[in-house]
Image (cartoon, rainbow, N blue to C red; front, side, top):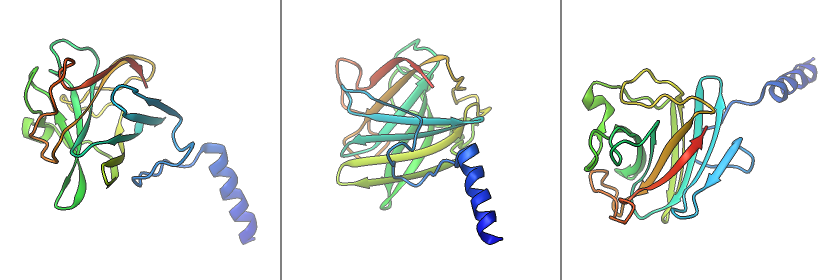
Length: 186
């Protein structure tokens, strides 16, 4: 009887798909979609399950890394929903942030009346190699977060700093220090 129940459970998992594992490691085939931005070296992988986005970010950096999302770009990075990943007290942390102006550092969503909207988070940082996984609702209901609509084009920005201090900006470049992936669709 136990073997029969195990076979039924395995069959149901295969039929409906296993839940995404957020553990700070990305296995081959774990995500439905993957894109690598050749200029920045960032690899983004994602799967959408129901109303939840599961995303992995892999990059090389001696400091923090970040991903910004926007429906459109109006004034540089103003209005971008930002997820910044850094190491504090020896452990990786995720910061849910919002970019109020075209320049300068982002604000924590919670400091602006918003909420912390990571449903799950795990990361590894070894040497200068980052592997970050997180989950968040497609529409968090937070006015500082961008609602993700599968199939609609968005702008995704990726950036990294030279220190783990998220208040320190990324290096300057002719592109403003961030790399933009336009016409990105989840």
